[in-house]
Amino acid sequence: MLWLAQICLMAQIILAPILLGGLRPWALGILAILTGIGILAVCVRPGLMRTGRYLGYVWLTIGAIIGWSIIQSLPVWPVQPYPFDLPRIALAPYGWQNVAPYLIWLGGLVTLTTQVAHMQPRLFIIIARTIVITCTLQLVLATSAELMGWQTTFWFAKQAHSGDWTGSFANRNAFGTLMGFGMVACLFLYDQNRALSIAKRLDHAGGWLALAIVFTVAVIQSHSRLAFVMAVIGGGLFMIQNVPIPRHRLIRSIFILLAGVVISAVAVMASPELLARFTDLGRADLIQRDDVWATALHGIAARPVTGWGANAIALVMAHFSTPDLNANAHWFSSHNLWLDGALVFGIPVMVITFCLGCIALKALVSLPLASDIRALVIAFLVMALAESIGDWVMIMPALILPVAMMTVATFATGFAARRATPLHAGHVVQPPAPDQAT
Image (cartoon, rainbow, N blue to C red; front, side):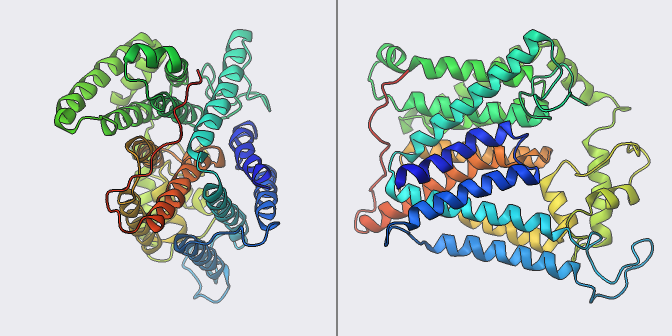
């Protein structure tokens, strides 16, 4: 039943962007059903389920966060001062019911990916190709809307981001971020071709480079500053890490950085809309991230330890808004997931989460992996981190899916290789057979 479990995984990568990012309750329900079917397919054959220590840590963390969300909503706390005079921490008493399904789905996704990775050594290639497929579909939707003059997400008329490429998303940052992931995935797939000469590699796998260029153009057409910067960072990181000759690594890295700066500057100047958006960063009268972040910091300072509970960000932002913040807008996020987390759960929870992330990253880097696989995963993680600092869209299933699946597949494969060859410290997990497809 590996094929069914694998289909349930890959289908989510394609469906989540179509379902408005997958964050709506009904959309998350569809993704959760697919995850459940995949896990059941693995459980059909006795002894097929694999467990790992990191899976236990994942579910322990999920259980702790859900438990804390429930505790925040219990009416057992001292009455909070005006204007939030409630006998509980959470301003929305049932907000934890939105947190729990999302985290349970995410834990199920990690579990299912672990099982498939143990049975499918080519999972890296399959995930990368599926990312390219979903990016191509979104590109077709975006270009169709542009050519036909439709201002729509294919679900409803655009209420914002008119003139920007968004595909079936309602947010240009989300569309641009997905295209950035697709661009790096194409670079990874191109690198799978082991031809010695550049000419043969371009002949056999040049199509992946062509798609990478097309996805880069889509990032530019989204007019998202954050997505553009994220794509440049991700592409540059992948190429720098994948320099094959250590002796020339520094020279090539400097060359890649300089080339990236020049190409980025040319791309920005070639797009008047994107250039105007970067120019707007210098306007003192423009409502920007600084006012939103300042408001969030005021809210965090009021309750640094306990937080305000799930679904409370809008109320907190409205109450602590700075004078320059647009009070007419509905600020459901501080446009920074780390500040959002501190607002909801408190600073201690976010510090623990950050430490766990650092431990996981250290473990990931120490695994015996091929350079291209390590470069791909680190590029994805850095891109996700950059996006989480500048916006909230990284929480969307459509964007967290590629990063989570690729990271979990790396852990599963790396740990399996380490257990299989404990005496060979220099053993490296090699990528699958050379990819000759275009």
